[in-house]
Amino acid sequence: MSLLQQPLPLRGARLKLPLVDLRGALNITGLEQWQLGTGRDAVSIAWTLDLASPRAKRTELRFPVCCLQDYLDARKAEYTAAQMAEYIFGAVQPLVRARWVYRRLACKHSHLYDLVTEGVLRAAKGSVPRTGPGGGAVFAWETLVKFIEKRRVA
Image 1 (tube, one colour):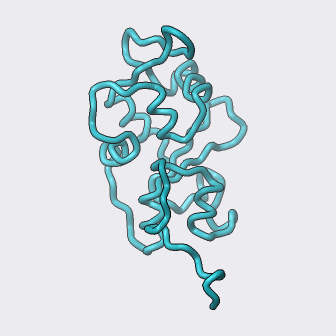
Image 2 (cartoon, rainbow, N blue to C red):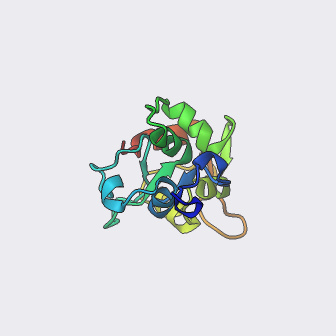
Image 3 (tube, rainbow, N blue to C red):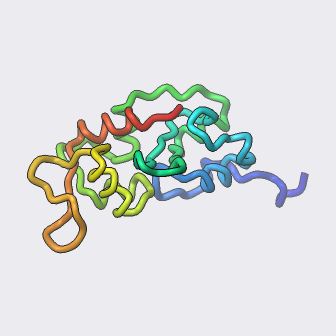
């Protein structure tokens, strides 16, 4: 096999965010879409999250990079919701800003605020869940851990 045909190891890749979307997961694993699965019942990567809002017509899957590495190494990923939240959002902290949340979840700010509006994710008491001056919600750590746990697909 020539050097160009060999897949790049994930450990050598430099990914800035802890979650990737379906296209990123396909690029990292080298699998086809039908092998990875796109529906909520067909996903085989541990701790895959569906970030779709309740009124969405399709899933918004996000795959943790650490779980993709476990999948490629044929290891079973055993993480708790708290460990996964710490992996995604960094060190445990009482409040997390909305900008940090939507960047780490690899989604747009409008999508995050749709989740807040639809009651899927609850902003901390007293914060303003909107964009612009004077806006910008904050989220309690426990709320984010529960969100990760509820949105887990596999």
